[in-house]
Structure formats: structure tokens, C-alpha cells
Image 1 (spheres, one colour):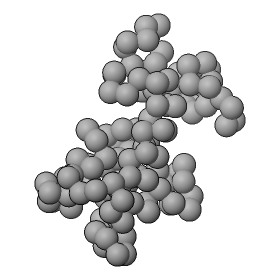
Image 2 (tube, one colour):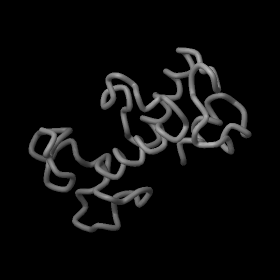
Image 3 (cartoon, one colour):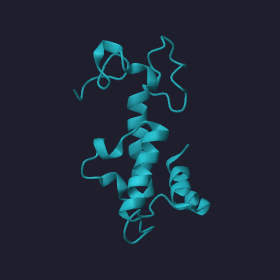
Length: 120
């Protein structure tokens, strides 16, 4: 599911999915309130596995629909090793699935073997 589609579902308006990428999410645009932003970030994390609040402490990704879409896509690609929406099976080896990483080396994040551990 795309970020614009998630956004449309969270706000309850299908037309939101077709808004231009440069539409601001907060003031001067959609005017999302804090509760809606929390719901949006929770749904993005559930749907894509990307925790925007954890990865972007300043929440700069919330500037526009496009910045949020690009942020999620970039981190989803890192997380999935370049496979977006592939369910983790295309690369083989069985270790690229998002849900199956908990036991690898006793670490849940930063296992490094499939996703790179340059961030630590």
C-alpha cells in the first residue's frame, strides 16, 4: 500500500490519495492534527515496517506528501534489501523477510547481513 493510500485511509477521504506530492501535510495544506499524525505514523509502521518517528527525530519527512513518500520508500528499500512489496522471498535464503529477523544473531535491528549495518 502506498503512502498516499495510507494517508487517504487514515483521514477517511479517498481523494487525498490523488493530491499533488507537494501538498503540505500540516499547516498550509491538509492541516493534519497531532492525533491524525500519530495514527498516520502508526499505520505506516504497521503497513510498511518503517518507523518514521524513530528514524526521523525532527519529523522533517512530514513536510509534504512527497517527502513522506520518499522517506518511507528509501527506508523500506534499506529494510527490505531493495525489494519493495516482494514479501522478502524474491531474494532467496529466507532471511530477507521482515518478520523473520528477530532470531538472527540475537538482534532485531541492524543485523547487517542482508540490509547493511553502516548505521550501527
